[in-house]
Length: 334
Image (cartoon, rainbow, N blue to C red):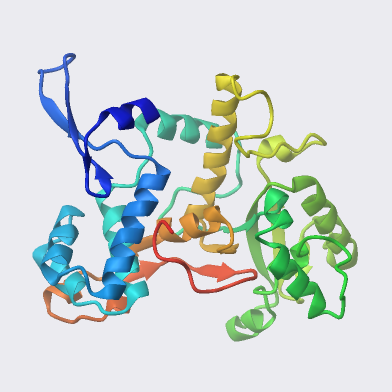
């Protein structure tokens, strides 16, 4: 990739397009824009800074919206949005609808086949899924990026020196409250909860400890006298090896097969997180931010056509709850 990019002409802040000719089909020429994560971030940072400084015109925003697959009515609405967070939410909804952010077909296929082996007791691939998901990111994040939040959490509980270097799993469950049972007029609400984590052994120990105190006969955890939660992990995290899926874990970097398998396992977790009814995580994690972005969709677009310009009525964000840290997401890709 680096050799390819270095060989291409630069146009301002980005690499220029180049052309590929398809010799296997009809010889059609396709314009290709080669990029990588840092290029995308640089481009989005450029747009973000331009919006703050007033350096991007309404006409440029209109053209960008149309290139993202919007209608003229949607593009007009998009160009009139003044709130930065609403702007990025609308842009992300357009990207998701247009399929700009999607997996290569063979990767999507391998993920689908991999998830089928899970034998999950719920349907993960529905528009309105019937399960919740929690993402618990520890690992190397605890060394620096999460350290401040961990210290803040334990200090709020009277510990000047944290007894452990992470925020306990129990804290992620605080959104499951008894008031929900009261408002619905029921004694118990049953929920399947998928857990994606790079620390499965410790998380399972935490769950086992909680179940000893507030467990039910069928092995579920009763939270706040209302929610009966049944937890599910990735199948390879069901034994003592409890694999994590970080790309740097496991075998040597040169072992492409092993790295690909770990990547498919990790992306399978990611897809399940995005499909859940409620997602609980945090924005300190790149995955937490990505999951939120992938849960944004266009909604009630007919209101745009009728000139009703309420962005909160035109963009839908599936339920996202923050376990700790800032509840304000960064702009897309940053």
